[in-house]
Image (cartoon, one colour):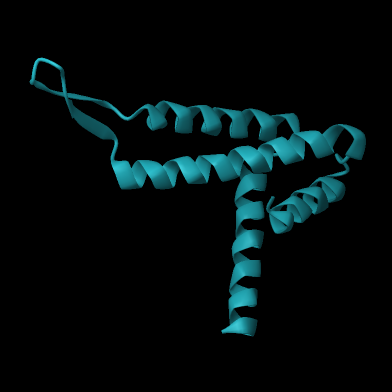
Length: 112
């Protein structure tokens, strides 16, 4: 679980006055889990490609969309719904991403 992202979300919700641990912690954990699974799925799609080709039993070649594309889209929908449950809008999500990137940059500066 991405502790840095979790801390950023909790901090952000506290600043907005929207944080209720008994309710929000589960939703935050689900959000982070879906983000991680989404990234894993996207990496696999990049490796395998969006379209898969296979040979049928009759010997003809067929193409179909990689099933991971649909799974990736499901994770993306889940992320949007969970963020909405937490009251995190698009602007908030961009800010959280910028905070996370800034922390990565500062970590890299300190340990490179």
